[in-house]
Image (cartoon, one colour):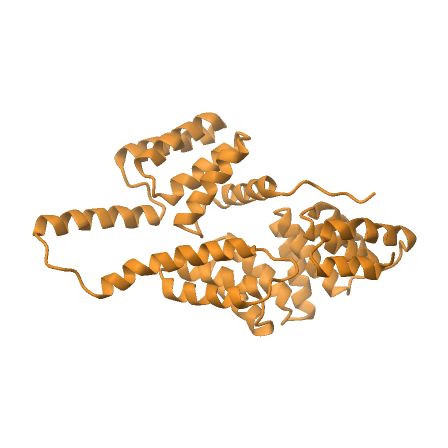
Length: 323
């Protein structure tokens, strides 16, 4: 067995199979930076980024100009939700290579999660100029377009992304892209019907429709729409402040019964469940929130970053360690 055997497995996305082969190479050649880099790459691909962070930090300490290793370290830090550390690594890369597509994409994703829309758009556009096949950049741009109300633009971007080859270390899986595309295309149907005009209706019907549409728009913007839902929502947030996570989750459950199409309430329910260590319920609520608004965030950056960290931890595959 050689390092080439490990690389062949990586090319087939068999990261778990590559780990023991590459670990053996690193033990035989502890000073070989590339062997350590490929082992770190396999750890990231196997959804076990913490060992990769350790390996890559050691590589960069000895080889500070190893740009690929520093870019991979940025991604590994993203995978452990260390956005500050990832930003530092990517900015160091860009200081040397201003058009490095991997670093631009990484910073674009971080800006997206921080809800810095204009900054995210700029980084993602620059990443695509450097690498038109950067599939994840198209997906994140599609989410930004959808959140801004440009459903048609979002659908076109996702269709482009679906045609591209899957990246070696994708941030968004094939199944997620297909799911988003289905939902975005479904969202286009009411818009197309609306362009055809509305039939004549009695005034009271139009009034009811107007109120319903207003409540729907409020919910889609993340604002709890019904008074009863608002009361439980506020009570839940109050319990969150006092660290009563079970009570918060219970209040948010009652809130979503009143306003089941509010992404903000679903997102807070997810956060409280995950804090209460109910992973299954937390992930279910989070996916529901994102089905209504893919860019939904909590009210404070600290809560949002903590939520993303818990979602990543909950989704993490069983850890694989090298022998």
